[in-house]
Image 1 (cartoon, rainbow, N blue to C red):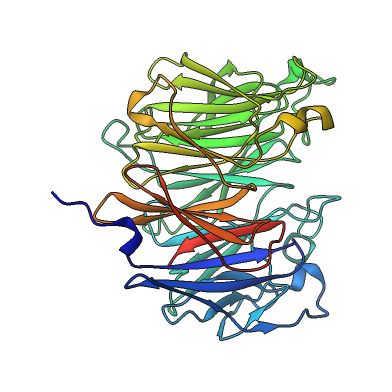
Image 2 (cartoon, rainbow, N blue to C red):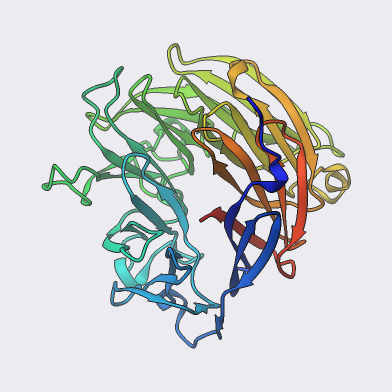
Length: 417
């Protein structure tokens, strides 16, 4: 079988670049070996209050801008990008065309005052987000603070697990459970219950208080075990949740980690963290592999002078990609590889096997993957501070090219159109 020259593969990307206040979008088209970068026209910054600024949903098939008005809840499609539109963090439901947009609330209280008053912040759900047929489905008030999400569903190993969304609430120390099955209208897109993550032996009070110091950050579902795994960053534990009863059925010590992710096949849950204390001149990233069949730790790895930022998987789930960022003291940051992109072989799990390390010149904002019949043909890294995209061959892991898109800013995101 002949493999096509990766430099000739056609693709279309969107590239968002911003500074947390304002931003811009360009559409990149690569066809017949030629590249074009096409900025979307900008609407200047509005006078709206922060909570009233439009939520950026996506781009249509014709590269028009899809916006959600947080006040009227109307979907608006237009040719211009409001430079102060809110690029909310998105979690995609793996079993539907619905996307869940996280609103962490204001920095001081974690409340979304527009939708939830002083009672918490919110998530908004939109169907068909990359289409002119985008539909707003609803906004749900959950707990306060930064959110992560995971989605449960029935599997061969766990056929009775319902379609449900779990949303963790950092400031409250809780998880909001939301119905996610259109065939169960009594619970669909409604708050079903709230799980209190409080561990009384780690609090000053013996009451299960909210807010507490659980600080949940790391939430995944395994179809292999049929359980939800939540990292209580404040306690250094994993709470294992039954998605049928929504009860915490087990806890496991898991210190030194700041996030969790699940391998695509669901057999392993991987914790990531960083040791900034052992060596005053070096940060050491930590990766730990938990087997969901036994809840035992089967693999560990230390990565010197690395602070892990984000994680991604390729199309067939055979590779893990970790981007890196800045952390630690000024002495540690001298040695830190903030611009590294690490590629791991997931077929070797529970062994953590590094395949490739690239240096991109600055931290990656995000990765995107070009799917070619169930395999990844190209990987794209948006390099925020440089305003560039690096293209990597999905098979060989070698860099194909790096090209300029825009002036460098602190944040960026790219995705395949």
